[in-house]
Image 1 (cartoon, rainbow, N blue to C red):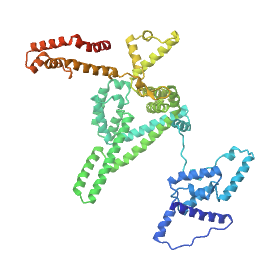
Image 2 (spheres, rainbow, N blue to C red; image 1 turned 90 degrees about the vertical axis):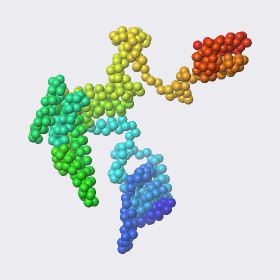
Image 3 (tube, helix red, strand yellow; image 1 turned 120 degrees about the horizontal axis):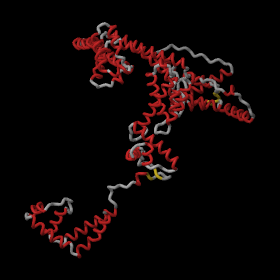
Image 4 (cartoon, one colour; image 1 turned 135 degrees about the vertical axis):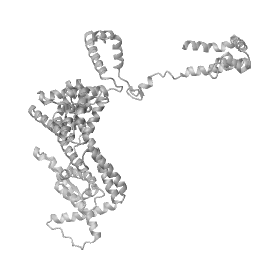
Length: 575
């Protein structure tokens, strides 16, 4: 509240000054006071400009002013943020409002302006497009207005549409630029001391079949047929090479893929960061007169420098050159990718409603486009769009196969399912009914069992939470029978049977009752053998059998068996 009152006083003071300037009076000059430390601090606080958090509220104030055409001093006081209290900040606000042609006036003047506005509304007035066109705002010039588009696809398409298409000649020029930048980047990385050891390590992993050579080497088909023989020969040449020129020649013969070159570049960056960290730590320890620890660190630094084949300063300067070459290479690739984004969208449109959103299809297609840029060979003479189409299509179809289903199905099986669906549609059109598995198998020339298996796999999973009916208060899972659950009727019947069995057993002698309970597992569900029961009663198994037979004869008597007859009938019906 104190901030509001202070701000209100400042606005009223500005109001008086504005009124005086309107009548041609100059603003009175402030008396100069001798500056003190306290007044200097106050002036520094007053000279603060509007903060970023206050811009939003100021935009709202301007929006209200533009809608009405004017603002009152009370409205300015109420709409401004709480923390705008200094005279400099309020002066800035008033000057911005003045630049936006928003007049700040008294309540009475505002009332009169509103009445004039109502009168003007009654008279029809034609406005040209030039008159209605808004002038650039001071706020948007000082603080750029962000682009607010709710739909990310629309925003992406809008930005994509601003990039011009390339002609075939421009494609070739850009492809040459990419190849030249790649060669420079590759040569700069291969000139590093770490590369020799990394390449030898990679070659040994290929020989041990730990790494697929197709993933790390860009070799011709002839060389791929004799991979191990070629690798052994090149490893021998690299180990023998001593001069820098021969080492570079041997490294170039490996034809390492650009992805591995980028990985080596990152490895150099990590080594450089480690060296920088240890160097700083060594200087800090020297300053604290801990020369023993500093000497140990310097020894580690020298060891790393010998492994890298250069000093810390040389590595740092060399890495700067690598980053420049890499940035140039990536920029050239980005230009070719950006110019062909429309191609991805046109292909992605054909694969909608297959389990992935349109934006996801575009992103997967963009991955394929980037791979096409890496693999494109302009010397062959065909257009880039022709070549890139296959990479984009493959990336999209693979992503649909991998991500569209809740339960993943292998890509080859997805293709088989699609073929089966196509054959089924043709048969429906020919026969006018759903085809049988035998008819599909005959048309596809596969076994009937295989068709049945494919049809089972092709079924989409249904969520148990799927709502049933218009109200949506019941779900699909509520209608599925639980085989393990016991029905209330069965539970009641078994409880009554247990009670009746207990009553009937009570009519027998204590020994007979106990023998039957142990022999048939009544109560604990664990039936005993004649020997086990005989051991409990300390009698022979024959005696136990006689007691059991006598007890069963008693239970078969109509006076007792009548009570259990209904339960036996019910159990036989359930079975």
